[in-house]
Length: 100
Image (tube, one colour):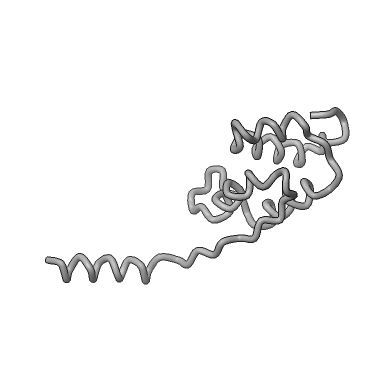
């Protein structure tokens, strides 16, 4: 019985796709979002999945000079929501219109 379980487990490890950790290029004050961003890129379910190009676009957006003092505080409590808000701000081009 043990041999069969080990063989099934071993073959399952060989069939799973390799996971490569992505390098986080967010500024220091947004580092709490790195894990969420990485998870969204590597997840297999289409809901909330990000392509690498979308994640890289968000990283470059956050590396440009923008000020989001309220969202920086929000990420400590609701990091996933903060990530979604930042993505919405970027995609709609709202960053220069009002302080967030």
